[in-house]
Image 1 (cartoon, rainbow, N blue to C red):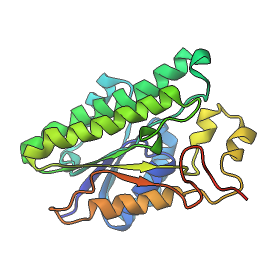
Image 2: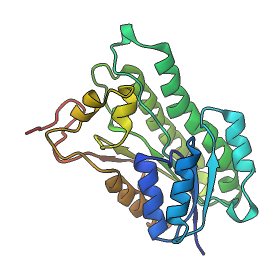
Image 3: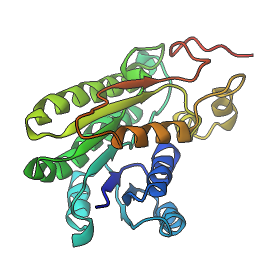
Image 4: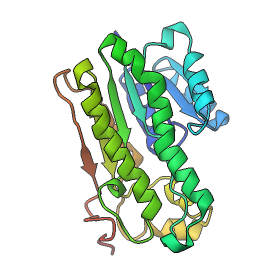
Length: 250
């Protein structure tokens, strides 16, 4: 029987590539994001490979999250795999110059958004005593770097929630794990630097960063393991990266 995956942040970067990778393996998809036109494009692209349903909502809006999940048609209501991927970085300022709106955005999306989506889906997994949750964290959840302050704090929270979920859901047979990527070439830096393309491009110059497809392939490997195998916590960096602040560039 085909499994169904619920993917947040599916309209770009890692989320979009996970959707594409899962479609190759006939996993049914519930794709979530804020940009309806991108959801439509992805649905059109992948519908020849698997069944696709889209949900347009912002993970920060808890009522809309709950309503979106409740609105799923009957044939998409059983969610086997939850990919908590939606997340953003805003700004790269020292703590004393931090922008409160940036702080709110990171905590609301990266932490509260993950919780709202999980809250809407975990109860059905508990009832069935079956399910797999994969949280997309970051190496920023394993260390702190200069000017990373609140973003790193939000990803440390994801790391803690991943561990807490795994402990609390252990009795119910639900697998919980995380992928913590380092430098991945996506729209991440465009968002962080608020459209400053020159500054964003420099982040990925002089070395070979990870590609979203690299993380997508790892995600499929994790969810395709036998039921007794749980990849609990995985950190992935490109070869050129040794830490958040050490990158070998040409």
